[in-house]
Image (cartoon, rainbow, N blue to C red; front, side, top):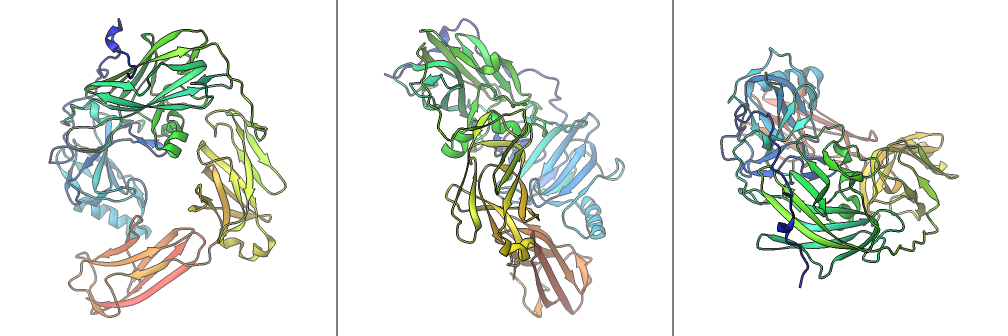
Length: 572
């Protein structure tokens, strides 16, 4: 019979409701005119960051009207190939800023303001900061149409509320929007972590993960007997939240851990600064996330975890089990609508230490709060102070080159240890490639030594220097192949009178696209680029200077300055 603890025995309440706050509950209207269903919520676990807003589903289409949530003025407009894509920032007189991202189009007034700047600067990507009296909006004004631009994975509106002065994102679910949520969080996995060399869980010095099952409304660990532990131990839990109107995985608002009824750890996702969001790599068990696809949130702090979300911490959440005793532990997990899930489990403490034998390869200790470096006859690796989350023994090795690679593969520690800051790497370059050094770049590889991404780098004193925020395998490659430009709906002398867009597909296989420019009749024109699809397009607006025959030229360069040119013509 599975062992679980009925939490009713506890003499004190396990968890309070989401803290009452002074956020206005009726100041902001919904940015859409249909019931809100979420594809993602605030604080959800994302790669390298906590999600900074809510993702409002737009019924799987683009082009839905987006409304100003309150009176204010547009304080910032940004168009990027990455991240938020086309985004509008509206500053409000009550001290908040709302953000609307992944937009398809701006309204006519905003679009005219942006296009004028794009043509003046001859660039599609742009960032503008209008004056307070330039682009004033009223609550309920249509400011844009929803889209799928930037790093969006599908049509939706990314919506944020920020403190206007600090630009710190706040949890929009605390502002009274009508979002149906009656479902408590789902608890999936319990993680148990030995935190030094003499500690163990179930006789092992490695983390152990226990599936969590649910019967009715009761969660329990899939373990017939108490979990046996000894020494310094940490715990973690994997949990997802789900709202009523959509099946998408969201994040819980708060997690609390108690030992024999005494709180030892808790956090709340009320606000998260962009300056600290990357510390998610320490908050989450990075190895389990990337290796085992388990998003276990630690209930203890590593040395260099600087997140400000933590509320209760007894000895940084690190617990000691040093006597032959049984302990009752419990988790309480809450969503932003006060739906609560609880888990109780028993651990049996032991005084027997673990006999640890350190691997012979563990010879170079890297410390969190010191500069660290590895240097041999060919390679140099420098880690500035604070780049790590905890001390560890650094490993380095090389192996034979791969297809299309130049020189060896350099295994810089491993893919499953995260970095907070950039590290600086210098790799050797064979002298036979010096003549083409401007075409050489460092590339990162996956576990199977397949290409992940180009990291770039600069040639200096016979070596390639680059910076990266990821450990793992690296090698050098040469990029002399220019980007490809493929016309989609145009060919010489095609009649484009019934077309709204001219479209091309542009791609680069290695270093990546650096610049793109389009000219019609020798005049620079505004071509938009969707990096996800590779589509480069020009829209025939009402102010297009029509001619019977028009010449078109597309110029695309990659990060190693290889250039491709397409020339053609069309009738309109």
